[in-house]
Image (tube, rainbow, N blue to C red; front, side, top):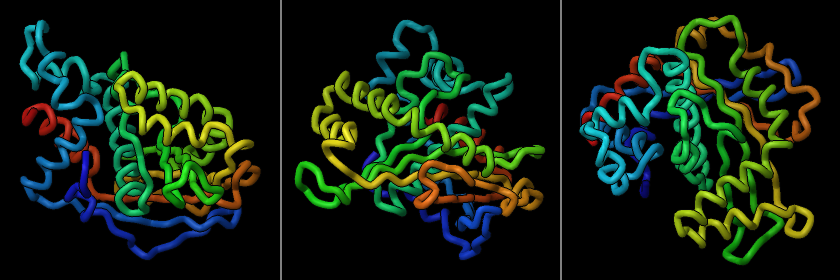
Length: 271
């Protein structure tokens, strides 16, 4: 997954800002998808590669009696209709979109290996949702290197819960989950022979010996209808262990669940 995927141009800063009950600023971004088959196909390919590489797909399909499309639909992708498949789909979509934001807009290195070893296709992956790395220099380590840990929640159907608050609440737990998440990322890299990448993760595993800057974030990806009835200003991060550098992001967009299903279908059909 090299280069900037073309769908990223559909994500833009609205310029709107809201303030939470604890005084933190919320950035409001918008996703404006278009009926562009070429861009949607590229997006679907980008999406599929979070679950399996195109190189590994033929070997995994071999012996199942399925073609590539049916294998992806019935073995790898979350179920389109049976719970909790749809909610896992929407959650994965939100995490991937926010990962695109911090990588291609903010300039962090964001490994995309979170779903590669998922055993239960309908079960969301445990640990910190999104991890980004930024390096101040080309040296082994620098105190201005950054580790960006985000929690992401999706709200694509009407709900009584504030999904930004849910993301903030989960972000409190990242202080405990960080070490296990970095270990899991490094393990996946070592198993796949990506030694240079594993060493970049290693740099952030001992803060006492190799200080760095830690940034936390909470993101909510909301359908426009959900965004319209959500009081984002009611969100409260009081007591967050890293509240001084807690970044709050909301991405809104039209008919997002339809878009989610469209991407999964394209990702399967065009494999």
